Length: 221
Image (cartoon, rainbow, N blue to C red; front, side, top):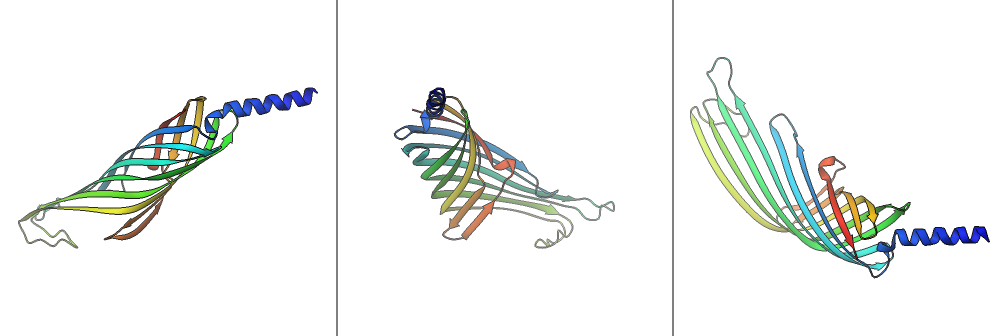
């Protein structure tokens, strides 16, 4: 009898601890992240991103819905040469700014861990609208090297812009902590990104770096 009561109590605790993941509930989640890296001594990459999603639990631990997102990325390369002889000098500055907006369906599945934690796997897909601006400035009295071979005393500046629509897909594992049944604190890693540009072809990236990690909060009701 005691064993039966203990099992019933454990089942009750487990079900109440994750009542927010049951069929018929709704989810609204917000995420943000930032990253900084130096691919080499001349370059630095800065990124900022924010996203939101809302969904409905079709069955226990499975939510489907819609996801929106925005990402800012800055890629800058600077090179300066000033030899000791001072007979040659050049300055090269190339900066590319990219703004990406995306929207599409989202699906997420949870795996319970204890009473307060759960793992999840999230997949999103849809349309991405990308705007890119590149600025190049050069001045010098010497030879920069491939692909730049300016004549002595040359200066040049150029700006280019592009816009395109692409298809995208993202796979993101994550961990959520529930301080109560209405709120979840989330840590999500955008581990695999797929992009198909109609003019540029396909691109697949997978990364497990901290720069791809977003912190978020989910509201369950």
